[in-house]
Length: 635
Image (cartoon, rainbow, N blue to C red; front, top):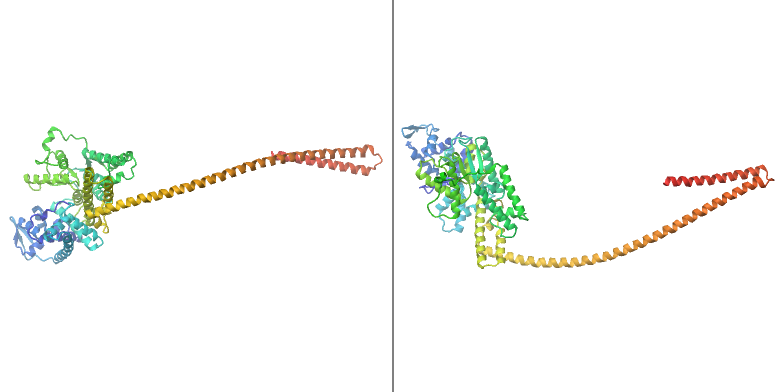
């Protein structure tokens, strides 16, 4: 959301109070679904002014001034002129407008909603003012009110008292009614942006548009800056995809941005290799370094980042000679002295001016080339040149060279997504989300300042390496990501007093000493355990040797027993064989004598002897066959 210019030149002290309630009123009217165009919305405010001031005739400049004094709206005359056409009781006569009193009626519902929003805002403003007065007893209420308006409506992250206002919002995150009202103010501010910029056509772009993303936006898109920034970047990317269905939007980044990313990852390699200290204030650096064991791991992550960008259609700018002689006339550089960082910002917007060939457009989305950046140097250079352009060119014929992510999201949402009448606003409209982002940026800046100061003191010898390490560790425990900011740690996150940092340093050093003593104790226990384990191992080894020896002796005994058993079996077989032979010989002799030598034996006895001999012989034969068959079966 661009800077809320409606605050400039306001004469009425109540105007800022009415202004912020007006945004909530604008959102409430839009939610009613009764209006077909933003001009009808605006006509309600004009009708109220006509009835409240009993106007009979007025001019466009007069109505423009009254809208600003009553509601804080700074609306172009062309928009007011279109809105007046929707009011049936106002007629144009020459260069003025006349009111038909018979048709002009009081809109009681409008007045009721208006009074309700103003009352609610007064309550919230009182609470915020009381919080600010606790830290700034001399705070002027009018300045506080302006700061609240600027905070809720402006797209800039840091305004006066923004730290206290953000802390108030986060600490009251459970107050749903308060959060809903503040969200409605920011959503109404987005609607106002569309009316103020006279975005009267929806659904597509007049020309193709190339958006050049800076380093932080690329880190947001690939998730290196945490989940909140990734969600905002994805909201932007989705709108770009919608734009590609209704026109042509290309996403690119300059080669200078690629070089900056490569330098960033090179610094990460040095940290992983132990040649540099970590950037405690850079969430992206922490995510790159964590889990990386070698410089190769860091290079793989860098390759993954560029691969992810290519998959999203975000590519490096085509090779373009921005330093050619015929383009030097489009260089944009301030006449005064600038820092190196500021010069980088001016060089960035100069590249955009060279791409545009110095052509101007009345609307950023029609300018064909635009930088999307959240870097202060780039946005600052763009704002300065934009102000210079307005001095030399007609009104409504200038476009910025760079815009913040939030601002371009709001414009794209209004232009492409049919912002008027919509019920789903961009993610950045949530005031609690903005509060967390503001606090995280404040914390990161303070961490960076203390880190740089500590490094300087270390180089000068004012603090030793142990003190430096303790401070860096204390700073690394501060929440740097918006999603880490909660109502229970908000106050502690913003506490950077010397007493707190000193206390943390002492605690960390004490914890370090405790850890050293604990490590020594653990090492002693481990050594004792190792000794016991070694003794037990030796004892087990000795027992194993005894068991092995006994097993070997048992094997020898078993082998001897098998040999003895084998001998006994062999002897037994020989004895059996001898007995069989003897038995066979005995049978032979008996049969021989019974048949040839004993003639006096009768036939019955002789037959009995022969039969018995035959049976004995058959038994021997069967026994022999059984043994043969048993051997074959075994084989």
